[in-house]
Amino acid sequence: MAQQQAAPVAVVTGANRGIGEEVVRQLADRGHLVVLGSRDRAKGESAAARIDPGGERVTAVQLDVADPASVTAMGEWVADRYGRADVVVNNAAILYDTWAQARTADLAEVQRALDTNLFGAWRVTQALLPLLERSPRPRVVNVSSEGGSLASMSGGTPAYSVSKASLNALTCLLAGELRRYGVLVNAICPGWVATDMGGHGGRPVREGAAGIVWAATLPDNGPTGGFFRDGVRVPW
Ligand code: NAP
Image 1 (tube, rainbow, N blue to C red):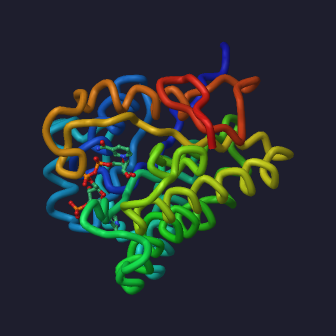
Image 2: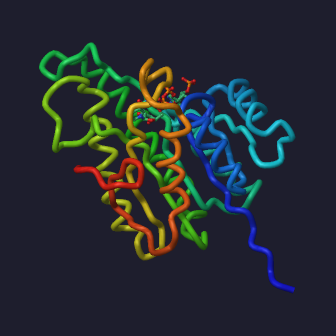
């Protein structure tokens, strides 16, 4: 009898609402077992129940990416519960600071953005690396933004832009270092999406999430160390 392949395990951060919630839904639909990270446990459990009322594919876990103890606890919980992790989607982010300018920016605010948008993704990836390196098909997706593209950066949203440019740099470093383990690491811009962060007028979460799920489910010969929107390369 052919050996059945275990369902891949995916961890999605900041997944109690917005694009993250939709990424969980789409990965669960594709047969992944999904760990829905939420800094508020009750909100995470509500989102998990919306997506998977039977609790067969989606499980909420308390995860504040800005809190090292919470990230460590999540890594241990995933190791105990599943013994594996195949996909990490670093989606959690804050502070789209449209009101600010680099020349007068409140640096404490910039630091707060870095702690979640850069160090949060870095911490979560490090916590899951021992599991990812053993996975047959490991993928890391850093949800970035063209707001972090150096090619078009010309002022405004300093905390957010610097944090996303830094996340892009981390993407390149990890992709190079993890290539030998077959880990594909990419930065994805979801485009302008109608969420609490994106506001009205953006495209539906379904479309923004699709490009992220594309990167989470790349074949083994897929790209690594790239920056994409809707599966198409965009300039760093
Ligand atoms: P959103 O609606 O504001 O949702 C952000 C999510 O991140 C929430 O679940 C929030 O949890 C969570 N979060 C924030 N800080 C966290 C922390 N320390 N630990 C864990 N979770 C945390 O944002 P979104 O529009 O869905 O954005 C998702 C991703 O897409 C972000 O990386 C964003 O930068 C990127 N993006 C969005 C757009 C857009 O147009 N929407 C465009 C480009 C890129 P709480 O509910 O607890 O606050």
